[in-house]
Image 1 (tube, one colour):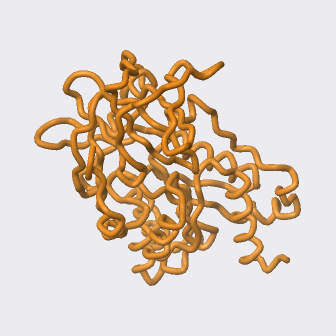
Image 2 (tube, rainbow, N blue to C red):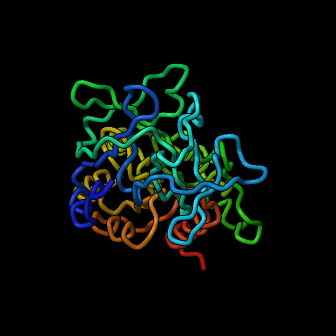
Length: 311
């Protein structure tokens, strides 16, 4: 699909403005699905497919893209719908999540739309496919379901929250009990993984499922002035969330004189120097890829050393 992806310059302008671009596609029938354009590398026809031994049932096989072997995931089957046919006319969306590249087999790509995160809502609490959604929105009076790709990938290759023993600083555990970490993520899988890792280190955690909820919590602690805000070691936030994204959350925190010194780490499945530059633009203190418990532990323990004066 030639020209379907926006330029890097255009996408960078969205950072901090609470806006996003969604790549919309279909699986079966007329229902529209979407993922964030930031995660998409390209859209291609499935030109070749090789079988994989001992593959997960949702993995069709592997394809070769510019000399690299990439697994092809039947996205329809992965979210509990009938599988799509993996033929040579099929469309794949090549994405990068958490430093890994994978292709999702889809029924067909529709278009890219530029939206405000305030137009994006959390999915309804119900059974069925909603378990595989992080958000819903509407476009041209049609419901659009935003896929929780992290959940899909976690079911194919489970993520770990364990910290390597050589990285775990037992001497810091007692000090950690004086602090808490605010973790913000709309994906239950990512939220629980980060929460489990941080709690292994001895910290209490508080959680929010979008940036607006987190910002309201911070303002409430600021207004109460009961010492809660002072106990917050850091804000660990996802980038893409309904209502208010992590970039806008960071921007709002930096604009508030009583919150501006809060240590903010962008914790995202986006990766690479381009995304580090985006987080720096809005004033984040650090950038971490998701589902890397050792790296998360290192950043958290170093922050505790910095505030406590420990060597």
